[in-house]
Image: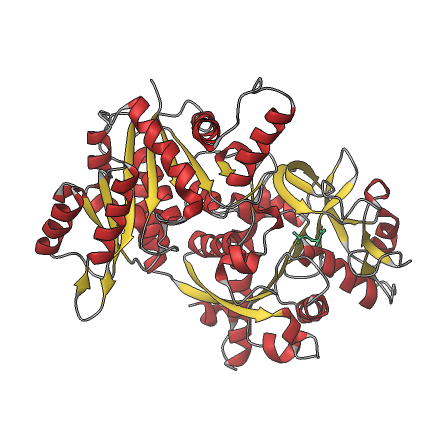
Length: 546
Ligand code: GLN
């Protein structure tokens, strides 16, 4: 079957949740038995998201094949079964990069290279390449209609539709209903007007709104935008983002999509999503987790990690209360005070020295007090630094990232990377296989000794320090055999102390929580139960459980 395309644009303001809408549409179509592919077109000129500040742009999501992409790809993978790669996120920078290379190689044979047709054609072929022979390819266009920089993408999808016809290419537009004393539809009218000026008439509107649109308003929007009233949907705020697919399905969004695309499918099987939402709303208990990082004032910066912790909660029917702690604030010995009342400590990934001593302090607290600890990437590296300094007697232990050319760097560049760190291309990116030690805690958690996880880092554990650290009790429980690199660590005597060089959060899904997060949250709940048992004197562990 020929792939059909759904193009999703947004208007009025950015940050409307286009990514969640695209991912939800993907989930609904999969529930109807269709295969989907998803892609994001980003109008910015950066070639990829790798060089962009997470403060501004949110986390960098890493695909299996090692592309550093927009965080929306994380939503796509969490909601669907699609495996996305570098061709599923395309930026203006990439389009121009590819055109300029071709131009230098003489491929245009003396032609004048122009936005129309060359840039537009390049965009269209990128869209086709992302389809992966799926039944439906969902294409989200970043930015807002009316931005100068998104014009070439809109022109490309307009032409795409002309060439493929409505049954094969559908336009969905997201807008915002402004709520003052009443619901205001004017910005929606303008936004669709702007689209139509460009030559795009959307078939479906999703109006972000806090309350359902009254029928009269739906009729009015329909009249002004030329969209059928039964194709104007409410994009309601939902308590959990995982309710979005059901919220849209209840209104019949997927019915309309398959009808317009002339696809005949079964009714959607959504029981797993229904169960998921049910579990989310009826937790059997809760845990308090300290989330120690340095971009903690912006949730987007750690999107996948936040979600993976929620998934870990769902796996245990527990509510996860995340307490964001800025690692810089921990530097002056306040760790004990700040972490006293939590059930688990997660130390996040990161780059640069700022806040790392606070991470070390948090890790020391968790290690000594027997509080479940999970270290991700830099979080694992700092756990090794902490252990080296405080247990193995490598008093000045550090990382080459902060103290280049220092003799006690337990974390450093590999010899072949030295001198190249500023030139790019030295990061370990994407999926790598690791082998876990038989009977290690981590192998028991995964229930296998062979795993594949995604990476995004430059520095590695220095093997020359490993025997000394092992002697003091640290277990190196996982390695990447081909280059003999450390992948995971654990402390056998501790209730739950695990660090990994990779990013397990990138493969966690609400319907398939990652085993490490599920296990960490379970351990945190165990710690909470013990802690509360100790608090209420006279109670035994059993009664505390009850
Ligand atoms: N900055 C560290 C490195 O490059 C860790 C990276 C990370 O936490 N993702 O190795």
